[in-house]
Amino acid sequence: QAQLRESGGGSVPAGGSLTLSCAAPQDIFSKYCMAWFRQAPGKERELVASILVGGTPTYAESVKGRFIISRDRVEKTLRLQMNSLKPEDTAIYTCATVYCSSGVPRDGHWGQGTQVTVSS
Image 1 (cartoon, helix red, strand yellow):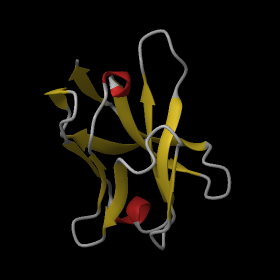
Image 2 (tube, rainbow, N blue to C red):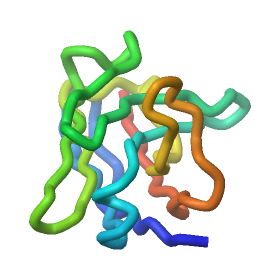
Image 3 (cartoon, rainbow, N blue to C red):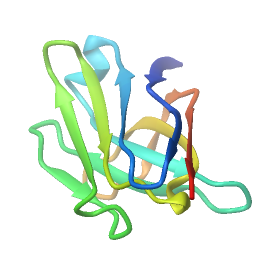
Image 4 (cartoon, helix red, strand yellow):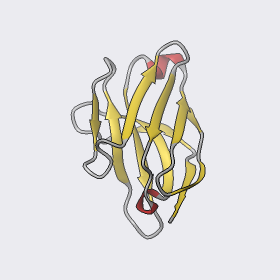
């Protein structure tokens, strides 16, 4: 099972910013569409943002205009810049590879997750 490694989580007040990073092996990063998911306690996992191999992003309505997903081809890293954070953004954020057309996660390519906590 390929390992993706997230970093960058933490605790911030509402209105603050955080940037998450997800390092991936070259063969994974260059081949697959990737995405960020989040899961809050008691809630279902939610697709936050996805990005095609070529760089075209898609966002959930709840984060559109506040979050930016990007691919750093030099460092082979997926990033999620999160601005204007709200308490409802509090969750464990995980990166994964996904099927490009649907955003459905592919088997075997998940990170361990990183906690984001936004206080009111």
